[in-house]
Length: 263
Picture 1 (tube, rainbow, N blue to C red):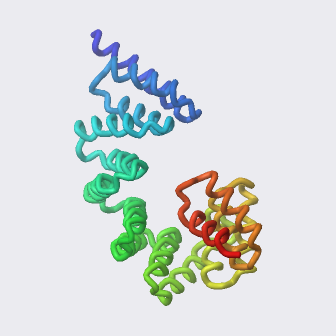
Picture 2 (picture 1 turned 120 degrees about the horizontal axis):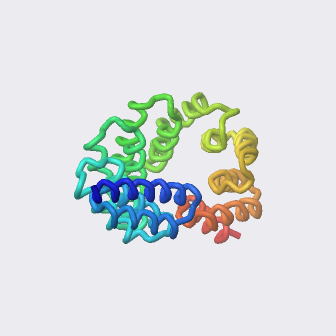
Picture 3 (picture 1 turned 120 degrees about the vertical axis):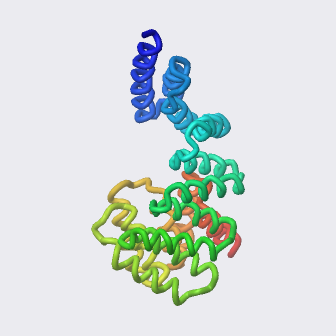
């Protein structure tokens, strides 16, 4: 009876912890999920919730420890493998990140976003053929999603396959609605930019800002467009703001070095 009561109370704390997570209150969420674990050590939801709270607090090591506990209790916890892999990625432990992403795909090969995430890691490791293979697989699973084609186009461009890159950028324009959300608008803008249609690119990215004036991804795209248009100071301003918001925006960092180096 006492064990049953403990589990009921644990569920109540889990609900409270989830609410704190939604509100961005990391420390309160950690405390709530710690009580879940204390009351019911077999409740894997408590470990997942606390790991997510640690993630919110940028405590990657403790998040990894809790995700590992969940994986040991449920080896086919596909989403948890993805989450732990992302923690390893943030720590630049790319071998472990890749292993977790691959295990997640093996456990559920039908989810396209898993291939996208692993493809992004392959691309960062300059393993472009493997990245293209993953983007192709994700596009096959969900052919109506332009994100896969945008990613593959960028990878093709990196290896100098401009014909395939151009074909994918053109497909992006067909799939991404010009009246869609911010992501669709900035993706269309990127495709226009890569196709050399700079005025259309600028018009499209400006629409992205209608959904939020401080969108770092749109800021990055507009910075590249300004660079292509020769508007150097505006490009530097946008790219710096994008990089300040997300230091891992490598395209912004590369462009800033290029713009500040050249006279």
